[in-house]
Length: 229
Image (tube, rainbow, N blue to C red):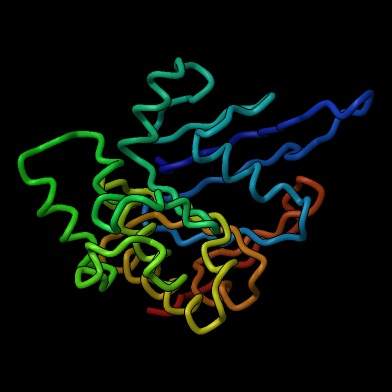
């Protein structure tokens, strides 16, 4: 069974008297440990599609299953629980709380508290080579370091799916490649399912599969035999 299955999903918005199809009749299956990159011009529907397959929003029509759960058939509380246990999110703007240290930013999103939370936080920071910066505020971290904190935050609840919305968008290409290599390692060594949307052409080299979107539709799919480790 695919870890994520989207069947003929459409998302529409009203703009005055016009109906905008942000995503239009998209079907795709994503298996465990896939590394999928979604590309397309601005306005192509990439972010909307990521929000739909990450259960941050529901489609206007069609069906999405995550771990076999149809997100159209569960209430908001169940959807929040599903996201918290199964999906880690990474955003272009990092979304760190400026008054909290790196460790506190990671700890803040823990969904199931244990006596070992601090040890867990330091463990995931070590996974992204940032344990030595655990007690620094975001303002004292570089852009690349802030994004690594964001990755650690995405990992803390041990999700099997990582969704990244333009994770290299605010970074120079060298730092961006470092971030992509971390995601690639998580995919290869921990079998995380990684889905990235991007404008950056070099990100495609890390993918098993690249999907191109235009006007809310999939216009091409490229299969890669392997991606970089």
